[in-house]
Amino acid sequence: MSAQVFLSCGQNKQSKREMAAINAIVKALEKDLGLTVFVATKENFFIGSPNIFESLRESDYYLFINFKRPVEKTGCYCSLYTHQELAMAIAYGFDRSNMLIFHKHGMQKSGILAYTIANGEFNGYSDVVETVIKAVRDCNWSPNYSRHLSIESVTLFPPCRFNTLKDKEMGVYHSDPFHNTQIVTVEISNRRKRDVAINCQVHLKDKGEPYLHYDRAPLKAAGVKSYSHTIWPGETVSFDLFCYDVDQKTIFMRTESDVVGLGGVYLPLINKPGHYILTYEVCALNFPISTFAVELQLGDDVKDGIQVSLCPKNHIP
Image 1 (spheres, helix red, strand yellow):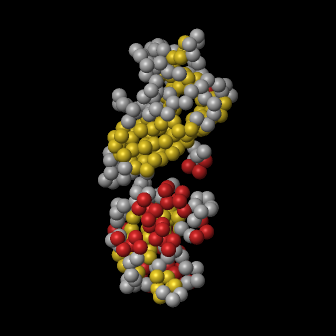
Image 2 (tube, helix red, strand yellow):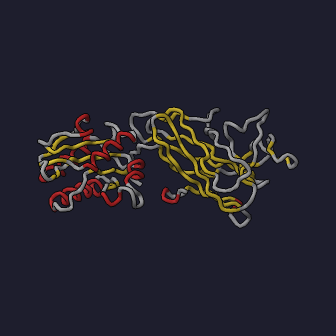
């Protein structure tokens, strides 16, 4: 999915010219620039899927257009809804790097807009489309950008020799260099151009089933002796989501909390065949928290005993 623009402009459905201008802006953003646009309306403020709050939190860019509003006895004013959305956008962490604000020339800047610098002004419906789209192009808004850390893919590696062996009496794993294990990793990218994702960590958010234990500690960062990564702009890193014990047919995690002694001790997370959804959270300094889910199938009826895939965003529990 391409980067999503949250368009806040308080549409006046009584004005054909205004609605035509808004539709032209949406068409240019989607068809010409390859972006995805969510248009905020009164109808999806609290209800709908997604609603305004959910879409604003998930959006990558924020576009504010301050049209004039005729108000009885007070002359021309603005849309109250758009000003509320602007305040929410700032609270959600949008800044000058991913938001654009446009103001109708000659209007008084009221509310939060009085303390916000506009990126440009337009004279009316005749030039608003050209003014907005030119600014979007000049700022290089890209469909590949994400305000969030991007979950790229999950990978199930072939069996390897990993230090685990189930102790049937204690129900734990001890080191053994001859035991076969498959590791499942997730790739996470930082698509921002200037911001570094410092202390990026991943942890299991929701067990979803009565697993044998529930460990929310940070997962092992792949390729480094750490449980966190620093992700530089434009780079991708990996984390070990979980491991599959090929012989014992169980799932266990490598987290910051499970290393107990020499060789490490790993408690199984799943020890029965079935269908599971594991939900994870990704956090990093100055980035919104991202959530993703992995679909896991275990059993003799599954090829190689295990099948793993990344859940679509709209299927996350």
